[in-house]
Image 1 (cartoon, helix red, strand yellow):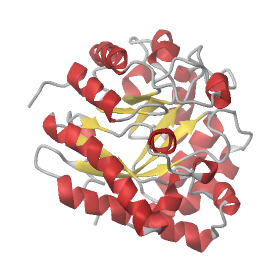
Image 2: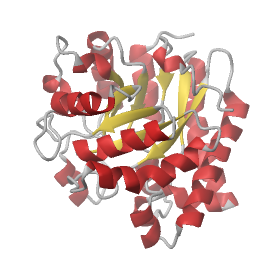
Image 3: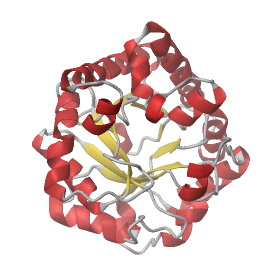
Length: 314
């Protein structure tokens, strides 16, 4: 039985830290080869699992030091059929990866969880295509496409699923409906461009409202991820109902646009201290945000700076 599937601490006032940019850290800082930006391939080997555990341990120690909880995301952002096919994984292979990824997270939870540091295991889901470019699936097609991965997680001790770098309402709708059918708690993370809108021009508020209205507000909460705070600060409206539904921030280190990041040959790690200050300002503005992590270009330096700026020392 999943430990937190019914009672998730981040929904009851507990702040949970998340990791930074897993793939960018492994590739640019640790020198790990990740074909097609897929970290899930590491789960299949002892050396890969060792690297993943070392990465997460660096972040878990920061959460423990601040008396915060932690969201243990599985490294399965790319573990869907289209990306799996590029990497030689069939349905059975992906199912095994999803299940083994939860197993790895359970090992880390056993090692680090305390009364002050609850570790929520989240099955990470990514978009069918490129997180930086708007997809063209209808909601029903997206539901069918993502159903198997969500079912894989529902059959494990994962507490929830989180869909990251979503850039269309239809894919978010499909994932939400698939999670509802599997009775799996879900969080939806939208990515935005430098104007605070989804790549197809939809406003963040309109995207959240559309998913909520079509699904009876099924998502446990929403996140903003894979964008720098300067890209979405002005899009926030504290008076709007959708604003209250945002429960997490996982920002990029860089102020560059997605197009610029796509063309970059070196990692832009930005300024960890400045990012921490921006999170502090966001935390004061957004009382329902209880998940604090990073995305592209961030690592434990950024997470430490965010925690120092937002959370009191324990």
